[in-house]
Length: 220
Length: 211
Image (cartoon, rainbow over all chains, first blue to last red; front, side, top):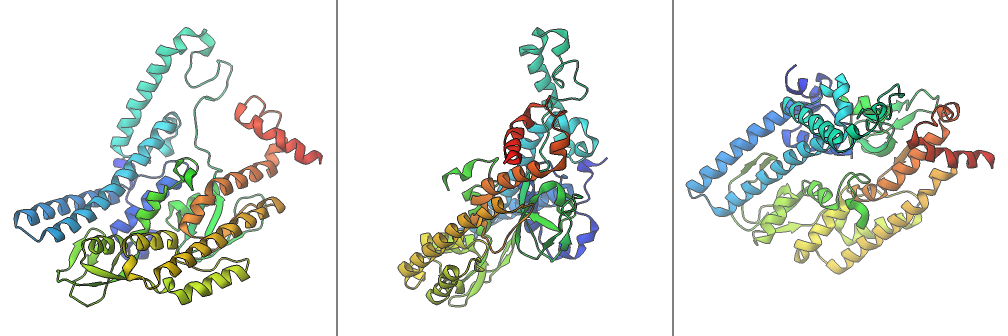
């Protein structure tokens, strides 16, 4: 698979895609990543485009400085560049923090693993290596046989019960740009929630997860 | 507000919310001449003396700091509009519509463009009052969570800062109620006993049931 296997957001939101700038999309990706409990799909195409734009802008600023363009203009371009850089860095950093936190869970769940970029996968592998080595050296090898796994509480555990996982039933606050109509929260037979445009809702993350992934709803 | 830096509990810090608010558009009247700016975040300008133009707030503030423009406060920041909002806010249980980033925008303008706001003291105190009324309402409004079974909460017209402040409490409260009322909670309570994290949740549940 290609880095993150991401062709950006799916085609369903084509209309809003062409009317939205990359700066806007990056901001949305950053917000969603910060507010979602689990790691989201790496926005490969968007990150690549943003990188290119940043590089282009850096060259422009250099050129301006060389050609003696009015320092005010240069400093404004620099500010705009700094804002974009901040967004991109914070986006990548938020992801790394999540990877560090849930690395063992991500590694054994193919769906999550494929959400990472190539570089993030490399980072995750190194992370797992270091973590395992550290746990073994400092504690595990000194414990009885039954208790030497870094994934299980003891040999008697059927599942890997020492692997931290994100809590998907966490509540999040979200907002939709469009009227989404009656939305069934889960299969518990509760009344559906009417999701209106531009209103804030506190909902369980797992029930609106598909809407976040398809870009219909934004986390705030 | 002090607790808003806890990254787990509230997703955004106050500084990050301000960063987002700085992208909101605002009208400025430049006093200098400058070509269009083709930024990553969009194209702005050209700038001509005395000709009003729309720019993001961060750009307006940057120009203002250098004495290159006057900022036109948004319409909702007039005494007339704010008085209306405050009255409506006091009369009704509902939240009045205000810009999503009204707290941050007004704060930035008070900090950097005081002289561009007419009757700045009055405007400031009106906004403070509105904020107070709304926060009080949030407090009393949250009681609804404990009164009825709440799975989803609509926070109509709540602003970014307000939502961020109530986030830790609201999300945790809803989460707890959600867990307590789920059928699995009752069925699985035996086989959950070997998992520690859930144990704490079982205590209160029993109590609620017995009453």
